[in-house]
Image 1 (cartoon, rainbow, N blue to C red):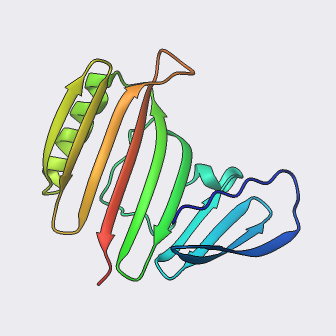
Image 2: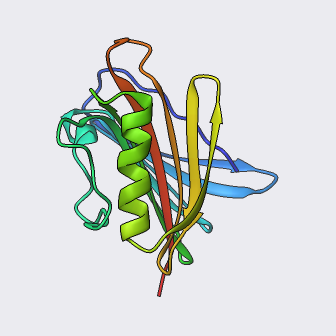
Length: 157
């Protein structure tokens, strides 16, 4: 079930229940934070300055480039899985950013494969704790930077 809630400007807390053929979800908006709760788990999306910070429980063994500028973060959880999606930009070139993550992933015990296609490099793999996907491509807003989208998911223990 996918639910998108778009709001603008209101700081008032709002909650509604959305029901579809697949089930129902409680959607609440509190200022710049939207939370969706369902039987499948919870998703929280923050659109204020906190969205540009790593979640407190983001894995410490996953490195970011020194000059990383976080664009957005999404923190998702269910009874079975905990996931993070981080979008950032870096002054590294595509190949430099890919080499940075290849080395870091290798050091963290990931088995992974990478694909180079035109202006994009994708790394996909796993270690004992996480499944991951990293996509690196030119930043559309600044040709001198690369855009990195990382998704990490772990099974809850």
